[in-house]
Amino acid sequence: MRIIAWSGPRNLSTAMMYSFGNRPDFEVMDEPFYAAYLAATGLDHPMRDAVLASQPTDPAAVADGCRRGGNPHLYQKQMAHHMLPSFPLGWAEGAVHLHLIRHPARVIASYGAKRETATEADIGFAAQATLYDRFGGVVLDTADIRNNPRGMLGKLCAEIGLDWSNAMLEWPAGGHASDGVWAAHWYGAVHRSTGFAGPEGPLPQVDRDDLLAAALPFYDALKSRALRPSDQSAS
Image (cartoon, rainbow, N blue to C red; front, top):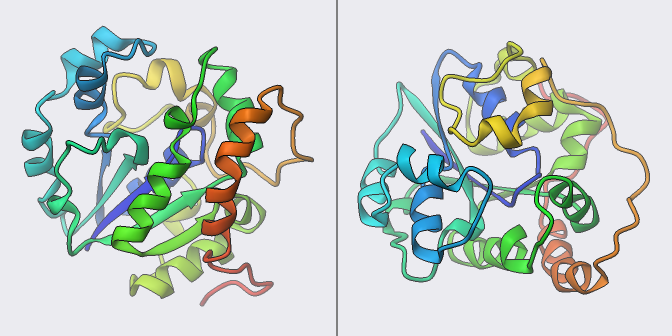
């Protein structure tokens, strides 16, 4: 099985990669198009030079690497906004598609703590909606995962025909061997974790009403298609 997990930044995507990466039957990939995205856009992200040096910058070459299978399964953590219109997408055909969503107010607040400026293209809600329209798949609101990791991950496994593994509920502190070089800037909290954090509090107040208004309709549309929480854990 090849799972492509589409997400925006600051969206539990690394914790989900660690969850699958702790299973003995899964390999994981961490944002393989990041360097190609930076090279194509010229954007000045944190650790830009290190990212460019760490990965291929030719999107066709990256796509070839993303077509492979795992041993026996592969989980790909992919940022939706990395898939520029000029990048190939045929490599994603035939995979299981997972869409991780988080309320944009939380994304904006968390992203702003790591990078001062942001546009809708940086947080990727429109790009993720486009990918959902093309590939379909399973939508999970990460708030539901944090509220009930066992229940929601169990439902996900049942939905995609994957046997449950308790290994998905925890991982060793300190990161994963497949982390991208950018982990030093972005992954501090998850490196200190050994499992999913608990429920979040009230929505934060953000000073980017324009960005919130641009992202919210895409979030709401995907939220309406999300797996619903259950009081009972999957067996």
